Length: 155
Image 1 (cartoon, helix red, strand yellow):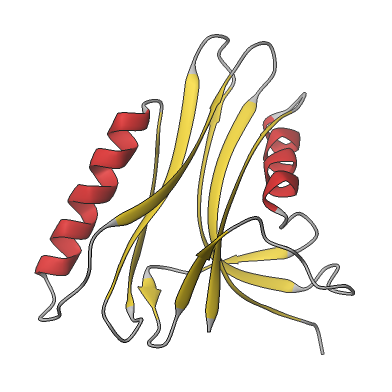
Image 2 (image 1 turned 30 degrees about the vertical axis):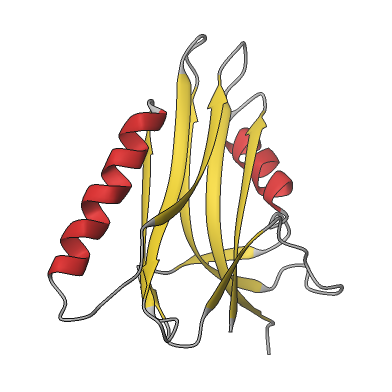
């Protein structure tokens, strides 16, 4: 199973349109989004790239872990990040964090994963992460990172 870690940043006249712009930048804008928690199944291979939606999937359900942050205050920043660890067989854990500070997001990702790994009797590899930031100039800004598992059509 391949999980695509994608990211996007956007701005718009409203927070919602800034979020939609970030979804467009990440390649996941024409889906109904279904959030998942934090568990990566065995056999998963993570790929960091913009998500490319297969033809004909408009309106499908998209299963993902997502971090999204907003700001509407001129001169301020927003940061979103997803971090993960994986065992040799591909299973692992995701965490997602947002903050006004890039460094705070990185610290929270590392602390969360260190705690979560400590709760388990498993051996995981190094912590990895992907970040997206944005700075508000004169419109709302959204920063988004998503780990896309799979899509599912409607029956």
